[in-house]
Image (cartoon, rainbow, N blue to C red; front, side, top):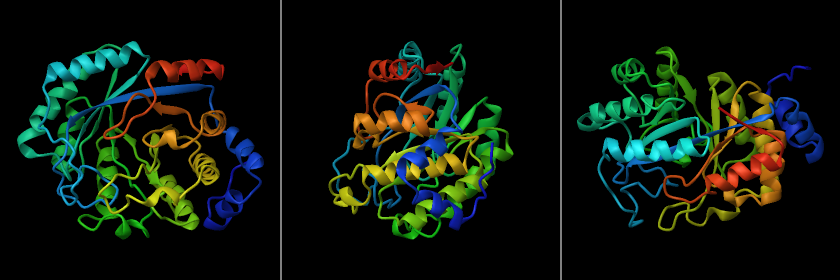
Amino acid sequence: MQTITLTKENLMELYNKNLDELLQLSSKYMKNDVEFCSLVNARNGKCSQNCRYCAQSSHYRTDIESYPLIDGETVKKAALEAKKHHVSRFAIVTSGKSPDESDFDGIVDLIKEINKIDGLQSCASIGILTEEQAKKLALSGLKRFHHNINTSRSYYPEVCTTHSWDDRLNTCKLVKKYGMELCCGVILGMGETVEQRIEMALELAEIHPDSIPINILMPIPETPFENYYDKIDEENILRTLAVFKIANPDSVLRFCGGRMRLSEENQILALKSCVEGILTGNYLTTTGKSPDEDIALVHKLNKKIKV
């Protein structure tokens, strides 16, 4: 297969190709299976960070429900239910900049509960890590850690000012240093330019994550981005996905939050040409498709669910 030279100029040229031609090119990097993952929102709200898209930030009056770390039985029940729907990866997700030290051992215990379930691989999304925390998570048997760059380095100050893009990058490096798989992606439609989407593709190629979750902004009332519905349209979402896949052929692009902003037709088009994973069920503060709907969709496409 012809190798694409990863420069900003080359990827911009690809981005602006005829859409059918672009999707046909990205489809050459696809496998014929789709990987399902799911999550449990294990601690919600009261986050100290000012990420301008987020309902869980304490900087905004979103009236979201807040609760402390949930118990192991609740996690086990959710994980077993997910497994019934062909989910192969199950994630513990907590709010906050970093794991709360008072909760960290409890989070490790939740990971161990998931590891006891045959056929289910553990994942965690618990914020910015210290080196010691990364080491402990690896020793606990955590298979994969999720930590998004969210947007390009150049645009990050427009999204958050209470931590930096490099703080996020450092956590990604720690995850890989201690031998865990990395899930690292973005949120599209936060006001970034096309050029900055290309930058994201190149930055992800340097990070080389195993999985790239693609979120599309679902504007939350009372957040600074509450009126950002028109910052990206469906065609540009597809163009971005295709370029991401071409720039990251070995990474699994994964539909995550905001996927419902795409029509059914365009979701199918993406799954044919550039997306190989689905975070099925509901997300942290927004709703998605039911697992049964996703199973039916994969079968409709004559693809297999990866186990």
